[in-house]
Amino acid sequence: MEPDDQPMSDTDDLPSSDDTAKRRQVLEGARQAFLAMGFDGASMNDVARLAGVSKGTLYVYFPSKSALFEALIRTERRQQAEQLFQLDDDDRPVSEVLHDLGVNFMQMMTAPGSIAHLRTVIGVAGKFPDIGRAFFEAGPQYGWGRLSHWLDRRVAEGRLAIPDTQLAAQQFFDLCQVGHLKPLLFATRDQSTLAEIQTGVAQAVTLFMAGYGVDRKR
Image (cartoon, rainbow, N blue to C red; front, side, top):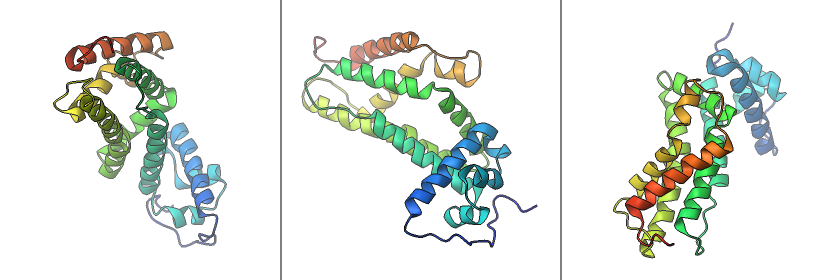
């Protein structure tokens, strides 16, 4: 049997004008396969079957299973981040914007699919560091950067006093995760309710504003 990380010679379906659609089709098949079977359990044959393409077509777009998984991570993390970080520049209170961001972030992070995805990445990152790097860059690092830029503008307006907005962004997201992510990750609880998430995020915002807020009324 041919290893999944070795390309096959069958390239009967070559890239054409529908490359983008075909690539999305392959990534959707990969998402289903990895979610159902994990990285080690899913084969390129499984991905091809679920994507509805030949194995040769699969290797035209991705040279190996690890490269396919890395591409899937970067695509999904970036799409989620783009949806999550719709931060406005209006005069809403900083605490309200952070609360909405935190709740949306935690709903995304605590979804069963996200937990399963995170477990898979943690499990393979030691063997495939590029996969771990892809997840980190397209997920946490990208999110920290987006929030940091928003915080920079609030500092410039005099609404926050933050010496290091990159660090503050990391602290905010970490505060939101307290009591939720690790219990779910290690399967000591099944889910977090919306009410629990809202309560935890409200406490995170309170702590954040206590440390960096200037005008508490805003």
